[in-house]
Image (cartoon, rainbow, N blue to C red; front, side, top):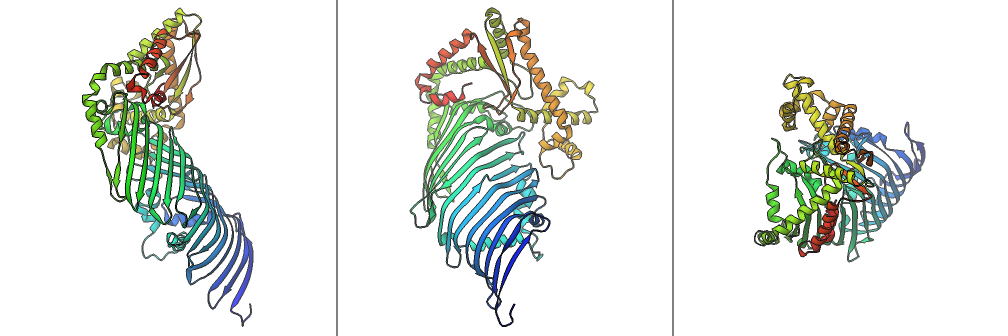
Length: 600
């Protein structure tokens, strides 16, 4: 360091204390002008030290990951925008979440390759931006969500108390990035390659009477070269939807005006039974059949919308009403009678106009179809009843559905099993193989709620298990999950403030061993009841029940799949032939492929 010189050059190389990673490079600085030049190479730098700053901005949480970088940057400490940089930055295996086992957000790698970054000259030129296996989970609870519990309502915790003057490096970095990107869309920008690959976005709603879950899995988003001088930039999104369905979106954007774009989307083959947590809560009726398709084409110019949207629901069917004090009532079967068309579909076109801030929905087609159904559909009532009866004949011949948490068979199911047993007795060469499919997630949830409410009920009524009657069982069934007394009991049993869902609290009260034992007993009871019909006819040796498979059924209920070997009942053959004939008639032929997706 020379006394007569204004600049100093420093070389550095060191390891990261108790954590993994290394840094090395050169740093030049002019002390008079505050100009600097940095050549930095970072190798697998552990980001664990940042966790202390995360805890300052949140009520709880952990962070882990590492950083690789090879950068050359010139700038001035007096002005953040006075920067010229190029090189590569890569964040790897980054995880942010409730604890080490429960992530809210994560990704395998975020890699940015910079040609030239110069905010002062308004140049943002990137070779590539790639995000590999991003994960994000959003959960709704009774009075908040996972982001609010972590960062406070509207980010109050993350914003921090005003006037404290406390320095947080994450806030400083965020402000710096904001300053650098402030004029991005008004600058010269280019991204040669943009890709988000194998993403996983989850949505869980625990605020209902039962959990609703869905996810975009294996989500891919790719784009053409993004350049301000191109006329259009095309972005493509595709993803399977869990538990069923597919989503695809194509967007063509004017890079000079983000309010001008063309959009085409298609949501395919979604079972409407996945919405049962909502339909049961707000109507009292679960849905056990039907699939949904939704597609549309939007043309937006300077925020003004011209769009067409098409909704198609095939074979919608509601089952028996579930009664309860915590469930609202809407006559879904009656509504279906008005909105379902002759071919057992709900088929609506819903244009949207207006602007992005105030869109206008046009329901003329909905009203027209409803009026047509009132006056035209009655003439085809005999046909529709024949279709419905034939479908049910095929369905009950190929599967036995079980009510959630139940072992009781409907009279029609009992008659069917008796007929099948008699059919086996008459046809010595015929065998059947049964494959049980269990909706384990939902069965477990219902069992856990019931058994926890039962413990509370016994305590509240000063009873013991020996004196628990079927009438008591019905009272437990009707007890709302959010009953004030029950919630006080659960919260007292599980005082952990980081357990946010009623499902998890009830699981902790029962314990995994008891829950698994109840599920095993449920499976055993179902097998015994099913087998009893064949034991009575002494044909049980020609009935094979395979080990159960865990699944999320398309129609939302656990079931036994029946496969015939050596012959099928004549009633089933007759039903198949009749169904084929009905499918060829005009009300159903138009949507024949869609109808086949809902068949058992």
